[in-house]
Length: 169
Image (cartoon, rainbow, N blue to C red; front, side, top):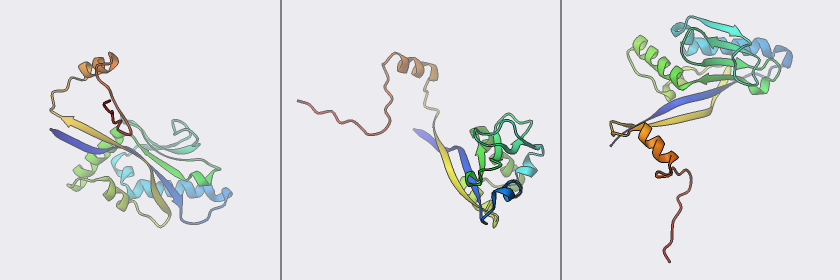
């Protein structure tokens, strides 16, 4: 059996390394966002990144969205709530495309740990707030429509969490 395990999508939070007043937070958040866009090479790989108030993650008021691409990738912040930091959301497709662009440009693959080391800055601390993993079974002859019907009809059971041990009496 061939199994491929990888990072599907992830979210980062960037927090300022200096104590910032609420009045200065907007400018600091824009500066942090631009620093991240530069260090990650996003501004190079995706030349159309617009500053916007629309299409951002829930609870965030301003940010940058990569435009004219078939995926979601944003760098956003709330103008008054500095404790929320700057959030960076990579969808599964955007992370995959980013990795492809990186490999084409630098002739080497990139993984999440390399990416995190690459974006280190004196302007912010970065932490992962969400990482979704994917596990793909490759060439196993699984029919997704058949599997779906089997689950719906109760012939196949999906379990998550603790394993249940059944006792015989």
